Length: 332
Figure 1 (cartoon, one colour):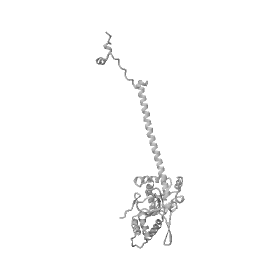
Figure 2: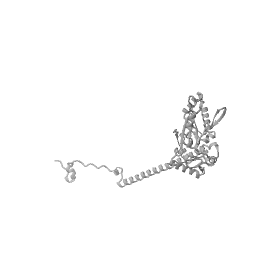
Figure 3: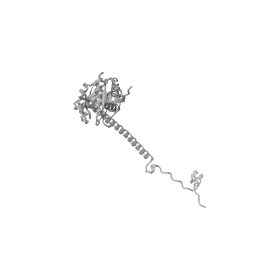
Figure 4: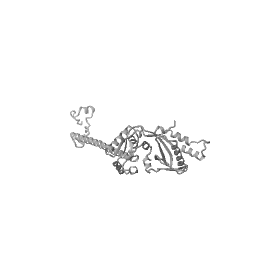
């Protein structure tokens, strides 16, 4: 009979399971033995890798923070440059006008950013300010800001220049008046960047600076308050900052008849923007003047022209002085 292994050489577990004649399996080698390292060395290596990983994470966070700071600095520089360019175009502007023109909206947040930007420019003597008087603004009392000679030099470094190539804008600020302030509000409230300010129109920098026409054997010239470009031509903008007399209204009607009777005219419409409550009836008055019955006595050509002007070439909007936004005029 073959020799059986001694019972003492077999573990009790193997003896119970009947595995006494099966060779014991080898244990799975540990990671330390696989790489030829002891357990203590493996732990040290693990801790060292974890420290390196944490350091890399912290370095990445610091890098992201540095990038954010750099982006904020670049963004602040862009805001300051756009503020200088806006002041160069309009001559002077208030805090609200800068907020609307640079940040695209006028609310509490953008007014704070506008104030910080203007304060930064003021401390470096790139702009000057003066308190806005009662005759200039009715909605709020704000400072008006304009470029100094140093600010005008900075604008030239940016590739632009002050209107009429002036050395500074102190004269504009000194002679600020309510109509120009209203025009500047309309300028920043316009929905597209293709618009020319009142100062640019006066300095012959706009594509349309004047319209010459004849009325009652006499030549007249009318200058727009602002000019804006649209998809098919230009919009003639009239800023209504006061009540128009009947005589002035008749001149506007004669100008529109001459302007829109020409087939190849690049002016598509006359846009009246109301900035004071006293001028809100301008739409009703113009429609009444341009509407004729069959027994009105006007020639047929004039009646057809006036009807076309009312239907195609007239627009009316209202300026909100708080938000500096334009909305269509509703005839109540």
